[in-house]
Image (cartoon, rainbow, N blue to C red; front, side, top):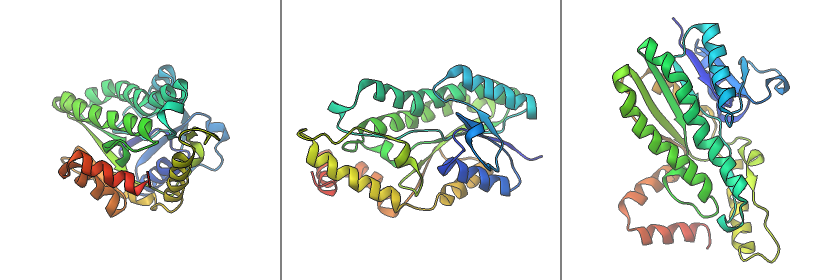
Length: 267
């Protein structure tokens, strides 16, 4: 029997790449979008879901269960980027980022767990970020929201294993998607104390995304996790140096690692 896969944020980018790849492998795949009617020519059936709205999340999950009578895999992919000096990012934008990148995925997990517990099986894959392993300049809010989801994954995986459920996460590096267009950019303000440093860093971040890896790599890792008998808790996908930066953070003194980051960002 084909497994039923539920992917939040599957109308574009990594979510779409994962969904289409799994569809081609014979899985039953459903995605979500805030406005499915505006997504043209989607190969994946899309349910209406706003990850910032708990009612919307539970409604979509109930709709899927009514259609398929089960949910085998939840992929918490919906997320949003945010950049800027912390001092200059509006508090509402910080809250919106956490609603999307942390509280939304938590609510989605809460919504599917009763069904998975009834099935005595299930897998949840949280898409986090390599940025969640370190505090990056002008990306502190994003790093914090994704880092928090990494820790939530660790905790919840221990809580649900006795029900036959596993929770893991995949941390991507830079991939060639439209995330830069969708994220919140604090404006580079003329006369700001951060005008020069933030301006240079923002240009560098956009360049990294534009020259990023093929999202198919993420899809291939997700398939590997779905087929694993005992999935690991953490997976990292990206360029060698992006993944190696996590190793360096673990082994180097804090101040040395900080100097490396500041040199990289020309701060």
